[in-house]
Image (cartoon, rainbow, N blue to C red; front, side):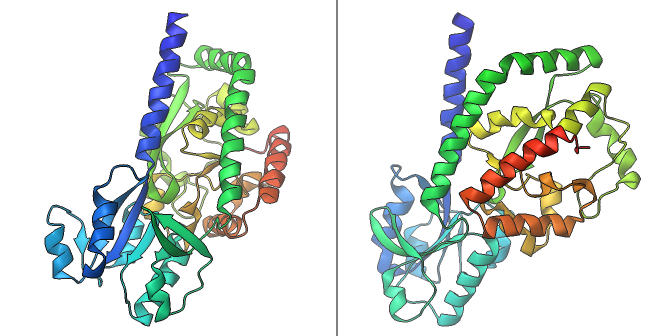
Length: 350
């Protein structure tokens, strides 16, 4: 009983720390007319966001925030910053910006799936297709939301998925314990396989799976690179020699993915969403691929339910993910959820 209470306490602490790490990160474009607003956003600890970058051409702003290590001029390469760091929203705390600059911001935010938040003053001199009102640090802004634009529905999705994950882990515990025993009996090595993946807007996390390969599978991967059957940066082999006998069954049925319910509980993943890629695969992505990371990665997705998913070209896979993101709805998630069970029973995995 003491051991169970200790594990429960550790899980609560782990989830709490994880939520702190997942605070939204902002890129703020500022001028000297909004010093008070900028000071409030960068110093108050009560907000559920943190300022990652300040972009400004104002020497006053630079002098006011001498300890902020990430202050860049307006001409900074925003696309490069979005590609190589975690940014959730671009916030314009400024009175004026040129139409060309605002257009660039709007196009970039749509391309990368980052929300653009602007002060009402800017709208007097330029027009961008705003879709709602946002409140940040008790200040009102106009928002150009990117996908998923349905914030309430997506929050409801997250709540339902976490509830489902917790319930499923509890109900399936005897089955999961049996699978764990079979893995230990069949081959040497740990029951679970942990691998660093890239999630929401570039956040890195460890993905959990039942181990389906030999213990030193990652070391052997380089020697098999010339046998890769997938195009692009992904690695896929239909008859991978590293897979164990039990592992082949787990992969065919998708049972090896069930431990990712823990990633859902931690808030790192969703039940439905684009599959998380490896860091080197993300670095090899083209810019138009990156919008797929504007929502949490999922255990299953449109690609996962394809009849021969491992033969789908990489660009087509990325296009499927973009289409999912751009047309997201609760109905589409329900459809993918039920089709996933069909895919499991048909044993289409590799």
